[in-house]
Image (cartoon, rainbow, N blue to C red; front, side):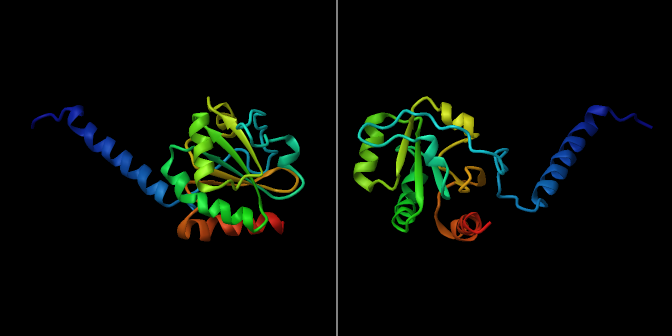
Length: 178
């Protein structure tokens, strides 16, 4: 009887391990949600640098009423796709704060001149330091803050379509009615 090399079994063990991880991941309660360590905690600070001609973000902007904090960049196609939604939220009376990240000042200003400004205040974060403090991986990412300044919800991706309707809007409503 020939002896089987352990190296012949190794690919089967690796494949079975990957299948087990995939099965576990698909069975999570909300597989599309990226958890945030900040949910339920006070929102991290936002840098005081602002785009020229726009008000910067102050600590007072993050408390007192439910606030939407949106991380965006002019070079980001999904940010362009969600921009009309942000304009509509602002027009409906929601306080929307913007954090322009990893962007060039002139391009960010051109983006707002072209599409309009939905933001009550805008932080300018060209090196991405604020995004790191908030745990943002890539734009767009949007946070809902309760009136007390704690993070209620984190939404990754553009605020469009059924995902926006089914996940973001209910979280926004829940933040208004705790």
